[in-house]
Length: 116
Image 1: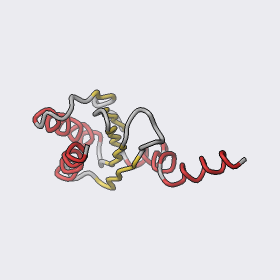
Image 2 (image 1 turned 120 degrees about the vertical axis):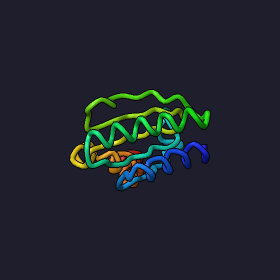
Image 3 (image 1 turned 60 degrees about the vertical axis):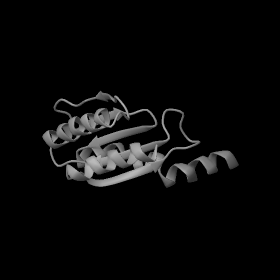
């Protein structure tokens, strides 16, 4: 998994992705162990990031990701098995707030629910 995550973050860095965040979902979600969230400044940049990442993962024989929303969308979702990648326009990233949902606030909310 470390190699998969490294290839993903390197590819996003090469494509000038902004505000790249990696969230640890271990024990909190059954669909993946890590979530990578990044922003792009245009729909074209987001689409290019997804295409480049897909190609890199295939070249490295790490994954053949399932991709949703890669044609002219403000949000692209890539499922690479143990890692899911969300590529957003900044406005959509703020609207959906996945970092708040799955980040540190998620743990605090889960603890509050467990206590009640």
